[in-house]
Amino acid sequence: GAVVSQHPSWVICKSGTSVKIECRSLDFQATTMFWYRQFPKQSLMLMATSNEGSKATYEQGVEKDKFLINHASLTLSTLTVTSAHPEDSSFYICSARERGREKLFFGSGTQLSVL
Amino acid sequence: AQKITQTQPGMFVQEKEAVTLDCTYDTSDPSYGLFWYKQPSSGEMIFLIYQGSYDQQNATEGRYSLNFQKARKSANLVISASQLGDSAMYFCAMRRAGNQFYFGTGTSLTVIP
View 1: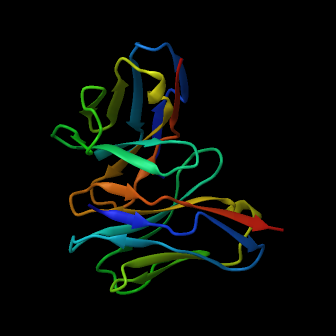
View 2: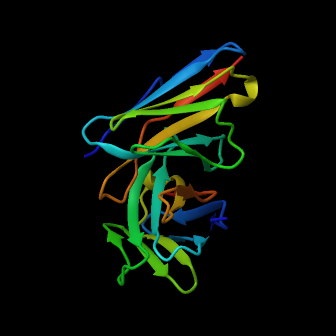
């Protein structure tokens, strides 16, 4: 089955630093990638959608300058949390969709803790 | 705005019994997709079942079936013969025509031995 690899699984950083999270589709070309944020015991909140060949589309209320998304290739997307602050601490999950297939394949998530 | 509602924050079911998890959605898109995902305590998201808005028949995947009522905009998940390993968070999700995926608030299911 399709596999999405997300790294790192967890990261602890100091306030003010930037953190990059990688999401790779290992055995398929991801024409669309999604980034979600999830607080404990809550739902997945869509942050942005990145379609092949175009810039990421951010959801309302998500700061594009703070959460930089780069869909570098059909197998790689990165989320960079710039100048992280404690309120950015959360579980971030990426997912990918292959052209012609309906379901999303998810990465294992990244737990970010900003001190 | 697209909205997905799961009105049951928590559900309990006896092992081997069936359980229905509710999901209603709101969209004006003529074409959309509906999904259910399971999230155990480990955090991974596990795909369970998919229903296309134009599909005439309700989707089934093993012990999972989706009760799709398009006019009521509901897509309830039915789990038959519950197992202890079914205890997890369950999320209903919708893919819009514009390709965004949105998730409901989730239902925590606990299977009682």
